[in-house]
Each structure stands twice: as C-alpha cells, then as structure tokens.
Image 1 (cartoon, helix red, strand yellow):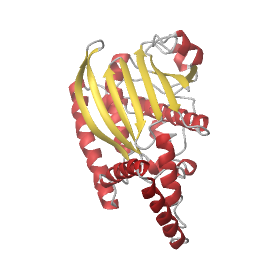
Image 2 (cartoon, rainbow, N blue to C red):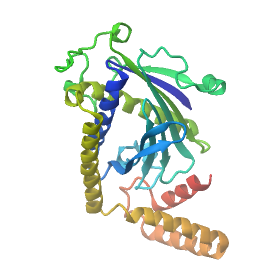
Image 3 (cartoon, rainbow, N blue to C red):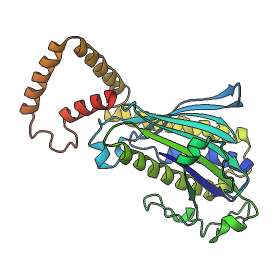
Image 4 (cartoon, rainbow, N blue to C red):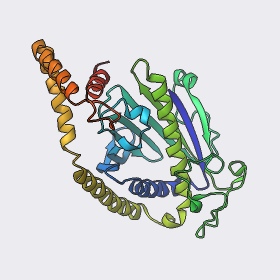
Length: 321
C-alpha cells in the first residue's frame, strides 16, 4: 500500500531541520516507559557516494503493549521494530522491519521543500508508482488528534510562539502563510501474509499518519524550545536524550525480566525448527510433549491473550508463509 503524506509547517526547511531533530529526540523520550519506546542502537555520520554526507541511525522501537488486542493475539509477547534511517537533509530514507515477521516492512522516502504541498512529484517517483500512490494532505491544525495524545499547550489553534510571533494558526493557514514548508513522505507498507495483508497494511498506514500528525504538531508547539539552536546544539541535545531514553528502557526491561534473553530464545527456537526439519522424529516427540503440557496447564493461564500453542504456531507461520 503506497501513500504520500504531505504535511505543511509554518517554518522554513532550514528551521525544520533543527526542529525535527529536537522533536524526535524529545518525543522518543516522552514515549519511552515501562520497557517500551525507542532505543537508539547507532547514530553516526555517514557518507553516500550519490547523496553525499549525512547521518545514519538505527533504532529499536519496543511496542508490544502499544498494539491493539487483535494484533497482540497473533504475536509473541516480545516484539520490536528495527528502524534504519539515512538522513541526507532535505532528503531522507527510512526502513522498518519486524523482529519476528520477516514479510513485514515499511519504506519511507521523504523530501522537504519550501512550499505549501503543491509539488506533484517532489520525490521523482516512476510512473508505475504514481498510478498506485494515494496523496493524503495532513493538516496540523484541523485534523483530529487522538485524545490520548492531545495536550492543551500543543493546541495550534491557541498556541503563539514568543520567539517568532507565529501562531495561532487559523483555518486555511496553508494558503495564506508567508513562511511555509512541506514534508513530502512516500510511505510503502508491505505485509505479505495471506488473509491479513490488507488489514495490517491499513492499520500500519493509520498508525504512521497519526504519528506524523502528532510529531509535526509538536515540532511547531515546541518551537520556542529549539528556535535559535545550531546543528551542533541539537546534536548534543539528541545525544543526551538518547542516553537517557536507552537507560530508561533497559532498566525497565531488566526489572521485568525481559530484554537480551528473549532474542536469544527466538534464535534458539529457529535453530530447533531447522533441526526438526532434518529429523522428523524430533518434531513428533516435541508435538506429543506439547500436548501433554497443554493438557496439564489448562486453566492456569486463562489471563494470557496468547496460548503457548498459538504463539509457537503463528511465529512459525509468519516466518515461512
């Protein structure tokens, strides 16, 4: 499913470079609690032969508890997305993959321009993609925000920047603003699993749109906190917030008894499955053992949304289907 989101902002592309970095670092910290949130694995300067100098980041987005119940019923307790991003501002590329579902991925191409979203093919995509693309204009003023994310101080119909004098935003602001830029984000979501493809892809697009709306609203609502910063200032801030966020997530995971041990367990399960393929007798013995354990544990796990049998079956199905 291919969608192009166009999000206008009352600032220039140069200003948004600072605001975006500040917003992502602060937003990631605010959303990280209870062992879930954004863990930064790598954040280093990177040079591409074609795009030139930029920044490469790799993050783990721990989100098991943030998923709706109907998705949690299909997956194991421990799940995270890996985000890899190549930032050659004003152009960026981002990829997301899932820790347990190899047939799920998201690719985002972004370009920033000083206009009100009027460029029809800002990302220079091919004719084939243009035919599939759905354009969605996201309005940071009028689009409804989930009540869980609404904050009075981030209401752009009332917010006025003390440092820049910009705001509050009025109806139709995108057509009459003197200072305006647009984020063009082409989002390609792919989930190649029969029976769930459309539902998962639509859910992912809705989630991405919601995140983009909240994040861009915050980038403007927080302008007095970052306006005037240099790139070095915001990189220093970013580094400090990343250390704080990583420590918060790892400490909570250790307290809950999850973390590094669970990926190892997932790897162990994969190795065992490969062994079973070579020796069917092992698979039969394990199946008998599983049935015995299942019978003996009936009624002891009634509060869990996923039974052990369901988790094992679906993790295998996602891996090989």
